[in-house]
Each structure stands twice: as structure tokens, then as C-alpha cells.
Image (cartoon, rainbow, N blue to C red; front, top):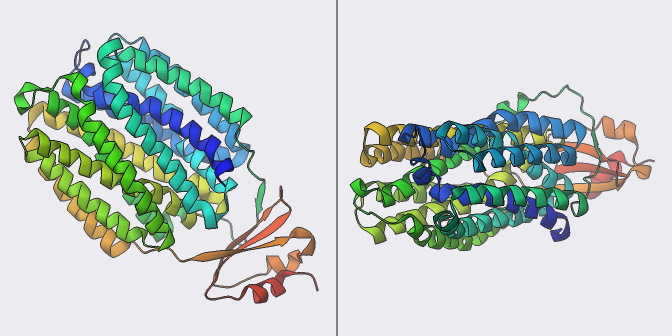
Length: 442
């Protein structure tokens, strides 16, 4: 499994590293550009997420039709062009355009769907945890390196580095990433993309993913501005920001492993999500009201612990709840909503810092998080445990398979690459031998 996931996780690592390198410093550096205001800076920080939101679903659906690799290549090329525009930006609006273009290369849902293609669902939780670990490592490196690179070489250097990382990702894509198997699915009823929103489990995961990402961007607008601007009482140097981000991300990385393992192995993702939401609430209250640097750092640490505990489980649960032919679209809808919230989070934080204070902003955020906790506690359910029956196509009676009807059978499909029929069923409700007898040739 690791050999399948490692190359793709490396691509995700490099792409997110490029995006995250600028996050800890972008808001304070963008304020120095011609025409900059806190409102426009908020758009800059979350700007890439607006176009991510617009293009996640089209990219996901495109990948379901033409394949994952060509779609990822197309997205990486767009991302490279956007990074170069950002690197040469000399005013706030050129930088904004570059950030929008960076986000238009919306390959996040495609990469996650590709992991789902390559890894059996029984092992998919571990695979998502590995990918989440790579994302968390990119966070940790970016939080430490971003402020140092920007303070010594300028923020344009970060965008040039991003271009190189994305180019290297293309090389990995075509030399190391396996080609996903060709899947054929047959259902009695026509299936529509909007069916995804009618699935309560998927809808709840979309809500969780959306709020998690929106709060992340708010944090990245607030943290550097509050710490470096004199009116907030901290007056840190820009080059010192790594001292808050690095320990926060290390703590988050340490917390992520046990959360992913317990969430998957014990089948308690709901409980992990609720703990994470409580940590979000505590972190924003601390960051909004403390005037002590040490306490503020504790608030940031709590935020990233909550974020990293949640991240691998979010993608894993969406891929579990979605049917095989809709994984790209389901992840596309979820990530579109999440990236739209990312854009709104940055913009909302920027607007409030323009005319209000951090205490008011964090009070509003705290109220949203409390509602989020209540929604999750009452709406979300832990997933049903499924098993999979794999039968060689040569042994399958396809008339019997096509007529297979049972409330405990989630779906079935044909893996044409490996010449297998795959049936997803509730193990506690159906005996494997009985199920096999229903579909094999007499």
C-alpha cells in the first residue's frame, strides 16, 4: 500500500509546501504592496481558495471521465503559471490575480480520489492518514521556513520555489505514480451528481470540511497580523513568526497519528471531530482575548492540534461514504465548499480588522464553532463497517450479479484492470460464502 501512496503523497506534499510557505507571512508582506488594505490582504490570503472552490468539482468530474493523471498534469501547469505571476507581482492586484490562478489548478480532490482508486477501502484510512501526514509535514516545514525565507530573500523567492516544486511534481507524476485501475460500474437507477447532497453522511462531512478550512484561513490572516502589528500589543518581528508556527505544527503532527489510528481502527471519527471542534473553540478564544505571548502561542498550538486531528479523517470518511463512480465528484463538491469557505474566512477576517477589533471577530467565530459542535453532535453518525468480496470475473454470473438486491449491499463494480468483480457489503449482516454463492456460475 505504501508504495502506491508514497509517490502521490509526495506530489501533494510538494504542492501544499508551495502553498503553505507563504501563508504564515503573506498577510503582513502584502500589506506593504501598493494599494493594499486589510480587506484586500484578506482576499489575497484566501484568494487561491475562491478559484479552488470554483474548479474542484469540474476537475473532479473531469478526472472521472478522462483519467486522474491528465487532470493532475493540467492543474499543475495552471498552478505553475499562477506562481510565476505572484513572483513577479509589484502591486496588490497583480498578486491577487496570481493567487486566483494558483487556485485554478484544483487537483486536491483528484489526488484524493486517485488514492481511493489505488488502495482497497479496508486500507484506505491508513492511506489517507499517510497523505494527511505528508500534508502536516508540509505545514510544519512551511511554518518554519516561510518566515525565514521571506525575511532574508523576499516573498517573491517563495513563489519561485513553489514553481520548482510543482515542476518536480509533474516528473513524479509520470515516473512514479501508478496508473489507477479501470473501473466499470453498473446500477439499476440513473445516478446523478446531486445525489451526493441527498446523502446525509456526505452532507455532514461537507459541512465539517467547509468549516475546518474556513477557520484555517481566518487563523492565517489573524496570527501574523496580531503578532507583528504594534496596536495589538505583541510587536514581534516578521522573522520571529516561525517560533509560533513550528511548535504548533509539530504538536499537530504528533496528535494527528493517534487521532487517525483511533478514528479508523475504533470507528469513532465523530468523537475525534467533536474533540477537534472543542480545540478550535478554545484556540480562537485564547487568540482573541489574551495579551500574553506565551498564552497566544498556546492558542495557536491548540488550533493546529485540532486541525491535524481532523484532516486525515475528513478525506477518508468522504471517500468511504461516496460510491465508486462518484468519488471524484463527491470530493470535488466537498473541497469546492471547503475552498469557498477558505476564501470567505480570509476575506471576513480582513474586513473585520479593517473596521473592528479582534475581540469582536473571535466572539463571532466562537459562536459559529459552538453551532458547529451542536450540528456535529446531533447530525453526524459513525460509518457502517463494510467488507469487500473480490471474485475473478471468469467465475461470475453477470446476470445474477446484475440482479443482486440487498439492503446490506452498498454497491458492486467491475475492476477491469485486475479482472475482478467487487461487492461492498455489511459483514455483520451477510455471510461471505452465502453472498459468493449468489453470484458465481453454477
